[in-house]
Length: 350
Image (cartoon, rainbow, N blue to C red; front, side, top):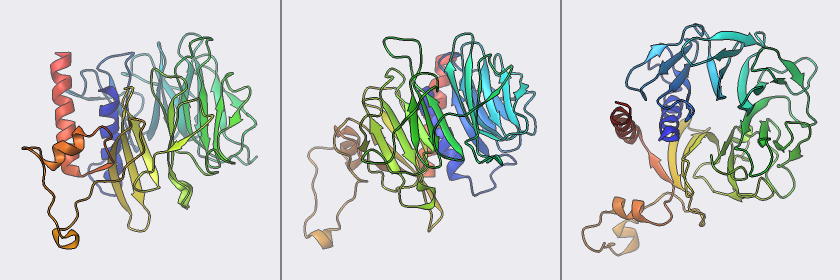
């Protein structure tokens, strides 16, 4: 439910990105099982909003006024936010203070170690004059920051994600997406393996990486193609040794959220460059071959009318199928989903 709420919030923000809906468009939404009921929403230029009852009520987050809040990351004792003026930290999400990197625009942020000493990794989309990849790390919960220069290609850190701990060891997998590829580390960034290029993944920008919360070796990677046709959505079940394309209806994937299930539901936002149209799709990943969006043949073109046994509607057959295909969701569907989620959370946290 936590990831569902995040997915819908991100999708709504994306679909309204080109319209002036309010004085501050939503830029990022996040929640965490560490603090049940806590939901944070970042805005473009108006700070952040915080809810402690699953979205029933909201208040402004003091300390983030005027900031464009682009990403959140959670440890056990601290919450970090990446903004247009560096990293901010908070103990509970209510009040925030500047952590560092105030002269950097931070668009990617992850917690590598959630226990003290908390280790943070941050990335910027502002290219330094040196031409190196703008990555930074903190080993003291954001009190101090140092430049982080791993041997990976790229000039923009687009996405940074950490996965759950493996069965043995105490180091979380770290995946970094840049404007030229995808890279993974299992030793806190001391070394990286390239996951793109060759026969694995295309050499392009990677904008989304999401782990299944209970699997350190299972994650999804997505790309908008960086203006090319190299975008897409892929799944790995073996820590990036192999990938399977999930064949999204449109190659330019701009946002992704995944439910925490063995056969998860994916919420995929895409953008069509030629028409400037944003779309939201759902996909039930059962491990089978991906299917495209459902279509109904015209009786004139097919010469026959399809019949359905019993009282099952086409919609019920789609959702009852063992392999749910990509389904396009309009704004009406988003409103229904959001209403249902908020109703569920109200009942849960009363």
